[in-house]
Structure formats: structure tokens, C-alpha cells
Image 1 (cartoon, rainbow, N blue to C red):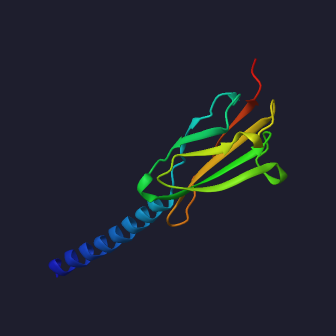
Image 2: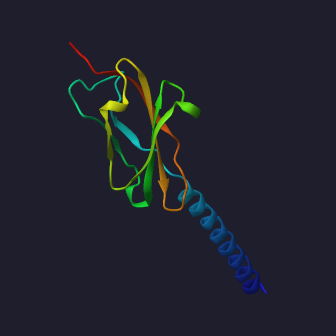
Image 3: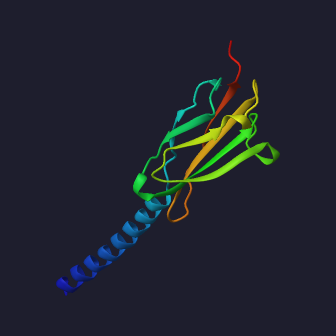
Amino acid sequence: MKKVLVSVLFMIFIAISTVYAMSFRKGFMDSVPPPQLISPISETADITGKDYLNFEWIVIGLMDIDYCDFRIYKGYDTYGNDLILKEQVFTPNRDYRVKADIFEDGQVYTWVLKQVSYSGFKSDEVFNSFRIIKNSK
């Protein structure tokens, strides 16, 4: 009788542990870390005489990331009509070049980046605002 009770309790423990481990793994797999912005992260971006502005970042969790959702907004607001560029940048790319002619001298822009896993889960957004300098003297 004692052996049967121990066996039943052991089976219950194994079943609960398996369910807990599966739910932990599912929660872990659903979370996607945000990328880390590298450039531009200062208050200004001087593109005087340049054809492109290069945006760079570090992909966190490279093995699970399908692409980065890359967006540029005119001004500080990151919604609606302020969106001027939206691209899916597939890994392992960690940068994106944007033609300088879409930027206006003295205008503020905000770039937003989030990572998307192969399962479709998304990271939190990271962003930075900067003012364009096209005609430095």
C-alpha cells in the first residue's frame, strides 16, 4: 500500500512538473528581447554631402529573430500620417541605409525598431529622435 501511494505521488509530481516546464518554456519562447540601437542615437545626424544616412543596431537573440520592423517618422510622434518609411529588414542584417534626399534640413525625425521572431512574436519598440543637418558650415 505504501509503495502504491509513493508511486501515485511520484506520478502526480512528474505530471505537474511537465506542465509547469511546458508553460515556462512557452512563456520564455514568446518573449522577444528588443534590439539595441547604435546609430544614429545622438540628438543630431549630420548628412552634409552624403547620399545616405546609415541606421545601425544590434540584434539580440539572433537565432530566433526573423526580421526587424524598421520605421521612420517625421517629428516626435510615432503614429499616423507622420510615418515616412516602413521596412522589414531581415536578419542577419543589422543596418539599413536611407537615401538622404527624404530628409529635410533642420527637421526632427524618430526611428523606431522592433524585432519579430520566426513565431511572429514582437519585442518592445526602441526608438530615438534626431535633428537632420544637411548644410553644416
